Length: 385
Image (tube, rainbow, N blue to C red):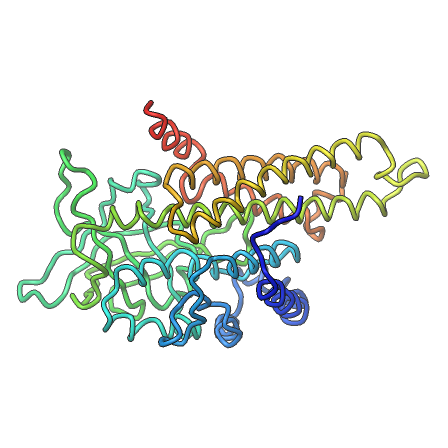
């Protein structure tokens, strides 16, 4: 079905991104996978191209776009090429809304120019070793100094995308003691300079997929953070998370749709070329039926995701609808990519084939940003259950 979310500007931008990937990413991507992340200077290159700060205001060096659609184009083109831009998505799609909505003018002037240029790469640290989806149970503490000039942070975070190379960390921490009567209270956001004494990057976690997106453990040992680096109001971080998790989940949803579309394209190309019993694999009825099923499920997913993109651009995407989009898209993508891998036979299990990387990369989408089970809980609550 014809998609209507993009216009000529988006398509021109798409060609720019596609050419950039072909010339500067694909030829060296195997090196990034071996290193576990792109070289740090790559993010400066994304800044030069205007990719990092598409939605940042022009007065801070950004592109001034209010729509998320250009970011969607980037995701679709990286998926089609079988690559990723490291921690780009976390930086540009997840973190910018927090800064735009809650930073002071002085903070925006300090952070956004570097954000858009790639001089300052950001990560967000929510998850802790003993706290996954239950964000209200965060135990990392930030205590205000006696003179009120800074916070002293102690604790640990894990599964932090981009944490190894980040220059600033949006840290969700507890600035007030845990209150069982108000589990969501007492949480605040601090922007931590990773050159601060007492901050350390621990293990870089070895994942089954997303090999070029560094994921790390972080520790905070009496790290001093100036009060001027408090983002928003003290004690209100949980409401900020709730507000912005909708876009995070939408980002995961349109990423899932993009990887499913790429998987189908790879499967079609492979089955047309590969011969079994003297005939192309694509000529067998089973291959045709499987790909027809995959295409139909993708169309349903794409319609849902595109509608969510439009709602998000209008500021009308609800938490529950974002959960529905993420749940359906990630579960459907898992089914589609599994079927497409099967059509590759044994070669589908070999990592030099893009379908193998898509298979491994997609599995985590049903976990991060809130598990599928958490999405079902949110949807059930929206139904009054």
